[in-house]
Length: 226
Image (cartoon, rainbow, N blue to C red):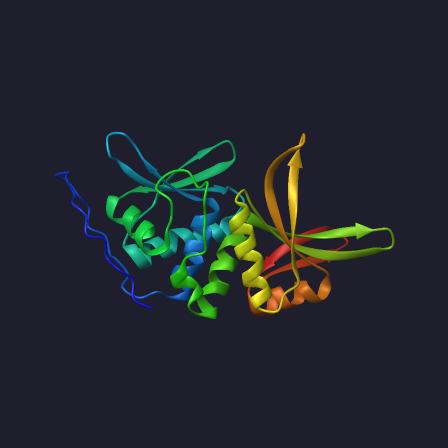
C-alpha cells in the first residue's frame, strides 16, 4: 500500500529533513496503533508541530521499539524527558505531523475522535499489527478470579465509543468473541473497554496478534515478550 508525502510549506529557515516511508508495512501499522494509544500531535499558536509519546518508564521494550522505529523509518532521533513516572518521547516536525495526519487520520490536537485508518483495514496483516500496537499502549492482560476459577482477560480501553465499536468489529472479523463494557465514574461515562474473556480467546490473541504472554507462577503474574 502506497503512502503519500504531504505537500506542505516549511516556513522556518532551519529545517531538519526527515525520511518519509513510501509503502505501508506491518511495522508502520503497529507504530500507528501505538500512536493512537499513547501518541499525540501538538500544534501551537506559533505553528510549532510536535509529535509526543508518553510511556511508563518501566515499559522498556516499548520505549526501545518506538525509539528504534523512528530512527529506521524517519531518520529521527527522538528527544526525551521524565516527568511523574512517565517518559516523554518527542520530536518537532511539521512534515511528520502531516504525514501521520494525511495518511492515517491522526488528529492534529486532541484525540476526541479516532477511527481505524482505511489504509490499515485493507489487509489483515496491517490491521493485526495496528491492534497489537494499540494494545501495547491502551491495553492490558490480567487474570480474573471468580470463586474457584481464574482465567485471563485481554482488554483495550478507549474514550471514543465509535472507535471501540471499530476495534470490536475488527476482532470479530478475526474470529474473536469481543464485547464492550462501558466504564462509569460517578454516573459519568469515562470510556469503553473492548474485552476478550477466557483462556481460548487469550491463546488465540497470543497466536494471531500479540507476542506478549502472561505468566502465572508462585511469584505472581508478569508479562513476557517473546
